[in-house]
Image (spheres, rainbow, N blue to C red):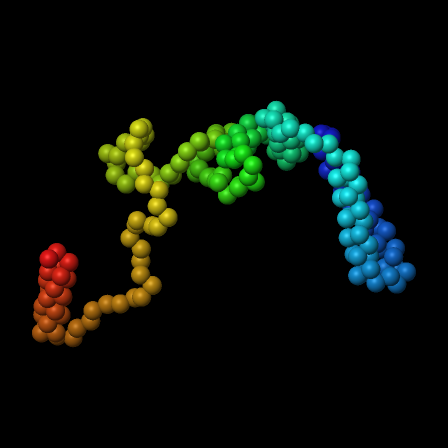
Length: 191
């Protein structure tokens, strides 16, 4: 299916450039000269394109057309149509007047056990962490959310350590030492 996005033409053009380059290499032209020529041609092509380019206002409809054209060459048409809306709305949600769009403000989360057609744009924060207890609610509304950039879960230390003893007396000393340490710790921090 030809969608008019230029993919086929680009592949044919690159193939022709490589064919010409192969001929030059056969004539003992150094590959460095060929790549320098490609770079010069690329700069000239960019200059010509900038001369003939027309400024257009980026409306939602125009962005939808661009996104649809790009996605239809890569995905099933039904999925491409669904993602077109999500992508354009996500970009418009983070756009700030007079600033470049920071695409790091959009995160794509893959949800396990969901299909691509279940894709949706969430304007806000999604926490896919699962319940910690069977009685926890499945959904919460009008709640307070802490967004932290540190883990609040127990992390395993990098140092492996243990307490070893050979006799019952050594064990008792170890237990007494641990109790003294915890008493000191509690007294120090609670007083």
